Length: 179
Image (cartoon, rainbow, N blue to C red):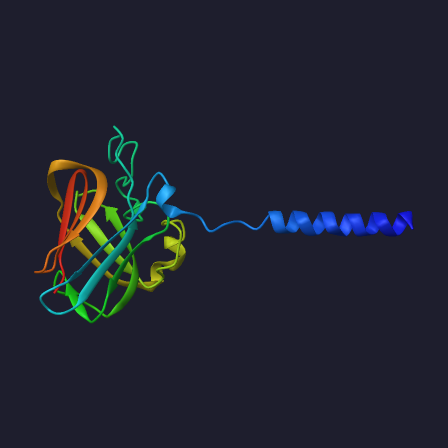
């Protein structure tokens, strides 16, 4: 009888432990770099949505102790890769991009231009798997950055009705046209 009771107690304990390990879904708004979304219907009728996590500068210097770093692919945000979604076919800086959802990466080049990368693998963490998924790039375009004024403490994206998309990060502003 004692053996039976010990077995029952052990099973009950394991069951209770298993139930206690059920984790709640993460509240992403509590992250140091919380989620943000910007969405706009541009003049062509396409809906453009950028879903990203919003890091803060916190006194750091972009390119030195804060991403992006020159020559490296950046997830253009924090946490999961930033996604860029369009409801219909568009042109980005004059180049065609089919409707869909893309991981959005950037690379700050040695000549100070930025390469904007639209990759067909949107569900990825950061840019860690980019090299493995590089063949899935749908579009790469180069643009010249400008100076943000005033500087932006938090990474911020804006989309205007005329299709101008801006990435504002510290004193950097990277603009590109979607039509």
